[in-house]
Length: 535
Length: 88
Image 1 (cartoon, one colour):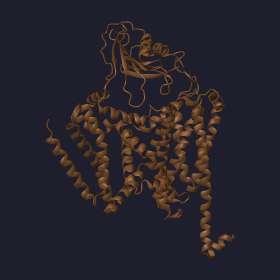
Image 2 (cartoon, chains in turn green, orange; image 1 turned 45 degrees about the horizontal axis):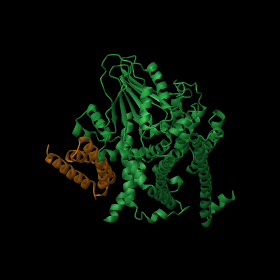
Image 3 (cartoon, one colour; image 1 turned 135 degrees about the vertical axis):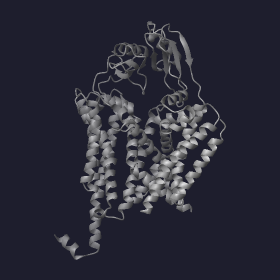
């Protein structure tokens, strides 16, 4: 009975893992890169000044000047001054502006903190594009993408649970690795990768579900709050426990109090460089409010916010909202998923854990084919096996090639090109698509070697292309101690070495395969073998 | 063929049936728990994902697809009974 249960779970693990494995691989890989989204952002905007050390009050002033130009009639303005790793640039945003067709419009802009003018340089999706792709996918309507991502995440949760059940010797297998034993090695690798980061996998999967919980489980919200979007908004606001400063416009114009002195006051309370963003509602109205939020500190940050009267500048409210245990637990899971609290060391651990998770999915997919191709030899492969093998090559290596192409396109597409940011992204998917086609045209063993070699070449040459096309290459960034930028180049170089090693390994494996078959043939001498050997 | 239909039936039971179970038990939980509604709804949603995953495992572990659906129907009946028994 017990073994029957385990057998059914093994079956479920196999098929759940296979069915959406490639989509999960995509989500894990792009999500893992998302832990370095800001670093990649900066790398992809080489025209940005290297370090922006501009006082918060000065950059708020600059942001304000720009907002008065681009969105003078907006209901709300946001200014995010450069502060630390998560917000290295000056960014402004606005909501509720009147657009040409009478509808309300929102927007945001990246500014040069020194001039307050829009940042010059190439348009790019940056690291944010990769990060957002891990839950928005690409080229799909938002609703379809959200539900597909939800289904994938649920599948992963099932795959992890069944994986643990199937695993009889969770602890012993931890120390088991039998290299160069074909299917056995893939299984060991899959086990070790799965077990070593099991807590991370569980955390990332479960917390991933929570991000869109209200979208995927709308009826649970509706049961308490009622149907419809407005009621769901009410839930989200109650959950956040920090209602947005919503105050109706009075219609009486009044000059806005100087935000710079308000920021100075906030910094006196929070500490210098601790301002996360400034929100101005109803600017230019007698009912204006200016609120300043503090940078989160450590895990479980509780949003601290000061709200000032936007006309007199008087402090109205110093808020440090208390949270219930439920909300604290809920927020902690989301924070753990995003890892924004992580310093450099922990960020690398996140990256490592994410990479191991990506590798766990990859080895699982390869294991599916390794298990089945022991019984069938190439010309007699069932169509399904051949298809999975090809999809594996074209995605496991093809997707990294696509992402590398995205970086190459960032350096090579001309800055004046109108739809530059879009085509960077198209380039990624065109490259991935070509790799899928390539995997279908070439024999699998050759396809592995060739694609790994392409990936190695693309990553090893990228720092060179960077040096030829920008002034933010290793020769500049390392002497300046710009490790945020140098780290991107160095990581890509290291990945290039890994790809090259894998390509060599794949080549020797594919050279070995025909040799073993000739050996087998010569062991059973037959006239036809002798004939073909002599010719 | 019978095998394929059985797999399809279990898959539907796991994906759709599991979703119904998760929603139903989530609603019961959100209304049964004490505390502010934002909290109870959040706890209910957090738990509902575990219910969905566990149901999926369950649907594939029982001996036949027919039994899987019977298990689902019993869960739903119990859930509905609990929900109607809640004071309001």
